[in-house]
Length: 228
Ligand SMILES: [Zn+2]
Image (cartoon, rainbow, N blue to C red):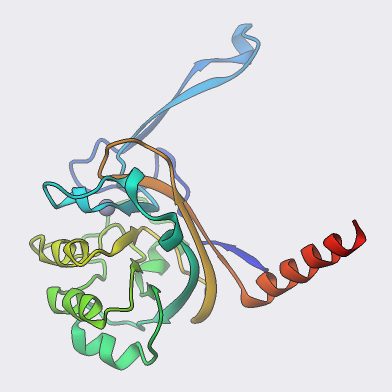
């Protein structure tokens, strides 16, 4: 398959952080009731499912999600398999990320199995980055976006350091990716948070395109151009 949907389905069964209002969809007009259309509204924790964190999530004067660079949210990315590591440290990243010049780094961990199995309850023992791993990412200087495969980039019991280090370092954080079945390697990453104004995060649809798909699309569109 040339386009891999790495988003988590958003519905009332989507696991959310303890204390979160979660996700609620309400149908307020129904065809069955004699209306001429169906209409629904959504009440949703902005950090439910696949979503993007903006700096204002943890930084008082940080930019909001509508101010994030689309140029960073779209482009070449590398998926790295972190195996069964339970807490990602700087040393782990040093061993697993063996290349330079990658602007978008997506970390696949055992968390993706939680999505694959469709576990409904929130898992507190998810894999995330220790503060020294966040520092490692920022100090590299070439990474502008980091993606993780559960609902937070920092471990459940940790303080806010991991988020703060990454956001102060200017990185965009994408959380709640489902990388089950995705092989490690290079892809084109496309992640578009909905255009909510003035808030600290937003749900997003995220996909990967394989390098072959990018090349084929390019060839096809160039072919169309020649025929015109
Ligand atoms: Zn978040």
